[in-house]
Length: 274
Image (cartoon, rainbow, N blue to C red; front, side, top):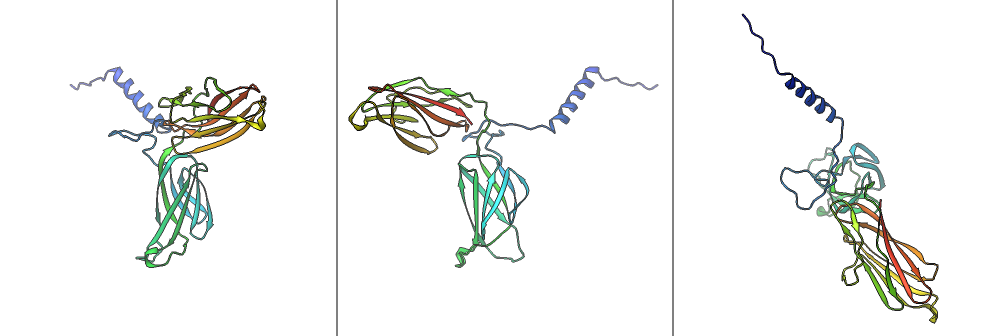
């Protein structure tokens, strides 16, 4: 007599759900919002995988990931536009395709532009053999870096209003953020390292209807800007630059200035995630 065992129904159901989930996940994507400078073992972060790689053949891209376009500027010089931006200096690795000349060496240089999201590669003959002339090469490229979170869901944040008395007074604002977004812009009159500093100078032309105001903006990643305006009672809004915090989310930074025409200048800082 032959006995046939029966598996519990719940086991079959679990197997079905597992297989269905596995099949579904093959067609999805994993989004990693967190980046780190102190990685943990067996962990994946947003800056632990390449942000771009591919093969450059003349002025064409073959089999790429994250490479938008390539422009051959001149002999041996290639400007590569990336799909996504990056924070701080990226790590760029290139390998020329072998062209049948065994033992020939080349020297490669690269430069980067954070604002334009470009990497420029320059190949030259081996400088160690005394020939620094540019040479065309087909090559593979891999780019590592901390990617920018463009299209972030971070909300816009506006500081409280600060008052400065003309002439010769100042206001300072700093940005407070969590792991993902800027959460506040506190008014910090005693902070020695402000993100935004509004300096109210003297009256223009000896009167009180116009006052000189300068705005200094310093990003933690080294970007600085400064603008000076002759502020009247009509006020003005200055677009002072882009802030990138620890969350690698870029924000457009504006300073809204008003003046009562005789004594007081007010300032607000407004940032909007790009």
